[in-house]
Image (cartoon, rainbow, N blue to C red; front, side, top):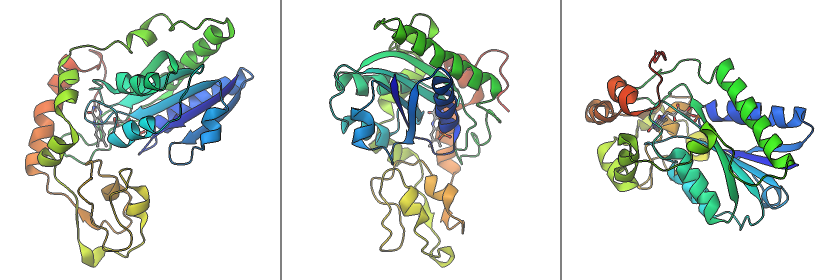
Length: 277
Ligand SMILES: Cc1cc2nc3c(=O)[nH]c(=O)nc-3n(C[C@H](O)[C@H](O)[C@H](O)COP(=O)(O)O)c2cc1C
């Protein structure tokens, strides 16, 4: 099989899962091209027989740039696809969003994989959750998933994989599904603080503009996040001069109200014995 795996990953968690799957596919003797969404070429997608799409979960759904990326894909008629995600325990619609985007392009989505990833969100109430994830166990499960895709596809079976991986693609009505419906970009912009620039610290290296997944920071003028900012705080994370600031008081309260440990345990996908910190 000719497999292309495309991932969006801000802090490396989803990329780790993509690489583990790619490694397993290769070990099974298949040709794999694993690439970030920013570097993927149309020919990589057009030429593959199986397409994998991975993303972290933001606001219990697929990040806006990933949704836009999926919308821009060419028709995927005749291709088998799978989706995967990493999340901080409150995944909501992430896998559904990814599979819906691919199905709209006529791909046959056969399975979804999800595991936890260390949370690098700068809100004080979230920062550092699930340290070290995805860990060895998560990556072993990712490999198992890749093997199941191979077995299924090689047997000529085009139906969704059975078991937990196909269940993950079923839409639900949990608390975090509802959050994902409400947390649309305009509301997120009102509820969460926008990073502001401390101009005196900025050395105009342009890294924030290059890294902004929403493409809303102009590198020509002062690098100020524009109105399309999705509140992913990537600029804050990558700036070598720590030139961005965020005032967290009410934003932290909003995030805490929705994603506190109790709610993540009750309504998210954290297992009863799973350590958060
Ligand atoms: C801006 C932002 C929003 C997030 N929102 C959620 C969320 O709603 N639910 C959740 O379970 N995890 C959330 N997370 C945690 C990430 O999904 C998780 O840490 C993921 O593994 C990051 O993957 P990456 O390293 O590939 O970017 C959020 C993280 C960030 C930075």
